Image (tube, rainbow, N blue to C red; front, top):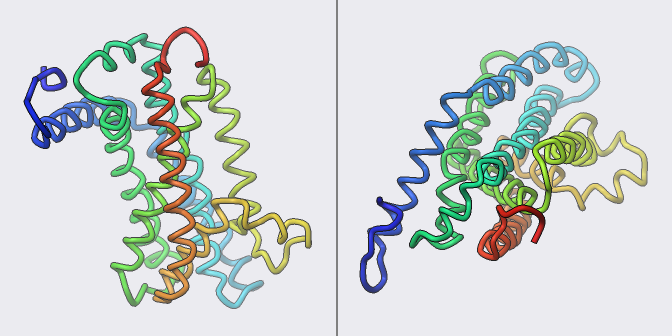
Amino acid sequence: MLLDAPRPGIDVLGTVNRIGALARHNLILRLRDPGQMISYVAMPMVLMLVLRPLYVRALDAGATQVATGLMVMFSVFAISLAGNAILSERTWRTWDRLRVSRAPAAELLVGKTLPLFGVMVTQQSILLVYGCLAIGLPVPPNPFLVFGAILIWAFALLAIGAALATLVRSHGELSVITDVGALTLSSLGGALVPLSLMPAWAQAVAPASPGYWALNLMQSAVSGNLAGTLRPAAVLLVIGLLAGTFAARRLARGWGRGGLM
């Protein structure tokens, strides 16, 4: 098997092969059950159309608010995709089989989440194009800046989802945490209502939400404000690195057995 092929020294090719084998396998699993992915694209599209008149009448940049807000909200819901991809290994009792291969925890984590990274980037890109075509979102003057923002946000989300998967005991528990957490984090971040219209206490705690930084990142990127993207991008990268490191350490210690570590 590709995961078990021995190679001496720093095995860069072996690493690529092992990650590729895991990524292909998990991509097949995703494609066999695309319902959840489709819903996270279709639902924000419908809500953008329904809510656009309200936001445009109430806010100067209403189209930008509704498009970027729903992009962020439904991308947070997609945390469950990453969590379930890893948690399924516990249900199938296959994680220990992967751990005895030559692939370290970091490779296993990347291989499991790489297809989902592509899914999240595709989701955000589709919604961005849809926003420009259907609800009047201004065409970004710097598409590469927007694409970079999407990559950073997707990385942070996948890392958070992977970290959550190493802490919960069941798919039901993960579902509750991700659904409630997605609504809470995105709402506190200003995805539904601009922060300027929110209560003082909500404005004070908003920076504790990754959704707050994601919304600032997306709105700055869409407007072409490079300077405005630097701070939220740095915050999200730190969150992603910390969550990813935590997940890799948990996985390396044997998560996937009968109970919590």
